[in-house]
Length: 157
Ligand code: MG
Image (cartoon, rainbow, N blue to C red; front, side):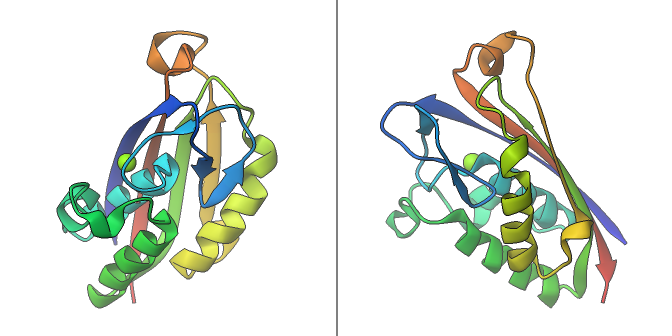
């Protein structure tokens, strides 16, 4: 088995869609970034790349590369999962937490899990998603950005 950890942050701004776990969530602001800025999927990808000892998403998908401008992060997740499979591993389980003061994310977790399970080639029972606020403290608490943390365990195929 192999274990990995991921962490990511994106700034909340007006005029962008809020995409988390591949799902568009209705909200007055969205996350800013070179790609679709799906902070949850980015943390998951970093955990997966960490588990196979292949660096991080900045190494494979540089944010200077126009190829990745506004790209759907699930397409990047597909590429990461190809690397996981090539290394001889599959998902054991993943666990992630999204740190956001707003909006409430619980209602969207079933759709996110379904989407992520499709792209990670595993059952939804192997994916756990959580959300927390930071009690109005810090940049997430002030609504300036959203952070996500993820861990994964991979099993040998
Ligand atoms: Mg990111």
